[in-house]
Image 1 (tube, rainbow, N blue to C red):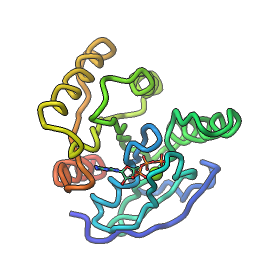
Image 2 (cartoon, rainbow, N blue to C red):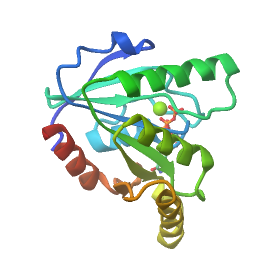
Image 3 (cartoon, helix red, strand yellow):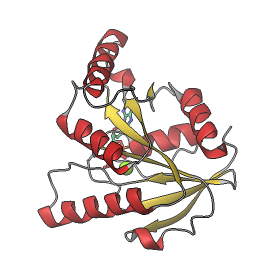
Length: 196
Ligand code: GTP
Ligand code: MG
């Protein structure tokens, strides 16, 4: 259960993040996929993480303290075309350094837009996590935007693609920040990760 959620600090430099003295989980995915909205939904704090209709809203590594016990982290998105190449490369470097160097990171959720067919950039990112040893699970977002049949079809297609990469399919969840769908499942999974 999440009883308390507070903003701690924002950083561009992964080395300046809070002392890695407690469990941490992070949310990543394409710009605008719904990372910040999902954080607000699962913590139950409406404007904890800043959201926007426009992609590219989250530009820093944002730490939130949950239940005075563990960290939840909101990251910038990957694959956002409308910023300069330099900016994009800086974000990508910041994200990859954070994900590979953060010693207290127990899990990363890769958010996938449930409206779309499997996207190369998401599959490549998942593969990168695998090769770097970053423990990743999937969250399919925005399930309220189309029928369950359509969501199921896209989820199934994505999972099928992951079979070409991994022997074991990754853990996955289907969510809607709008409707609160998937909240208990995601929290239950995180609790297992941070308690291990
Ligand atoms: P960046 O920080 O720019 O990388 O984006 P983000 O992944 O944090 O996305 P954000 O949470 O800011 O949401 C982007 C847009 O999608 C906003 O307009 C949200 O209201 C909308 N959105 C996010 N999740 C959902 C959802 O589950 N359902 C619906 N209908 N809209 C959503
Ligand atoms: Mg964001």
